[in-house]
Image (cartoon, rainbow over all chains, first blue to last red; front, side, top):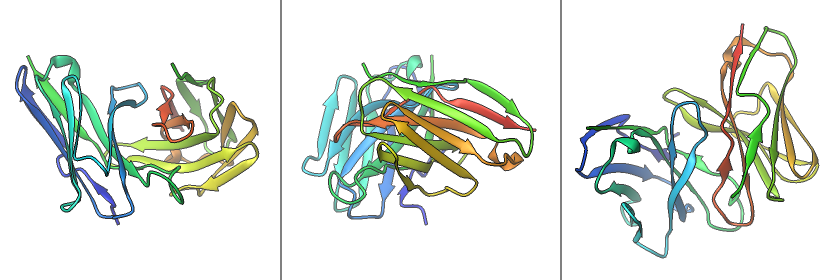
Length: 115
Length: 111
């Protein structure tokens, strides 16, 4: 049973526009959420995170929004750039205590930013 | 910056061989992880270790074992390689409650 779902396998966006990547989770024990970016033939790179005490976290062009009641988070990239073309993984875990070592990943969304 | 180094970027082995994948981190992190990544399946945890000589099974440990004799090094062992273990293998380390940091991966082909 998938605990973390990224329902869009791929997304194409024009350069300069907003990219919105979505992620849904089922386990209410998850309270720390991360986004990773992965280029082909490289390991995932940590992008941005948010804990459940917040509903928004911003870092430059990247903003993550968390809706706890809907068990939904999204990553906004504004403005999108061709170098943002990569696979984006949503990941989550309990912030502390049992299971806090182990990340559960979504299957990823491949973002293509068209020049 | 955290550096996680995987010993090989590409590896080709034969069915039935014993295969060792090595990973070293330079940040004195307690926690280390092995994942495999397959198209359409995301990252799946094979094993992790929270201290020297300690290990825990992840979601897909069958056909694999691990070794952590020193804090900086975490090895993944395929006891008898099979073609369904052809995959991208990713090692990660984590200190405290920080995000996991990944190596660049080993693309393993089993023929």
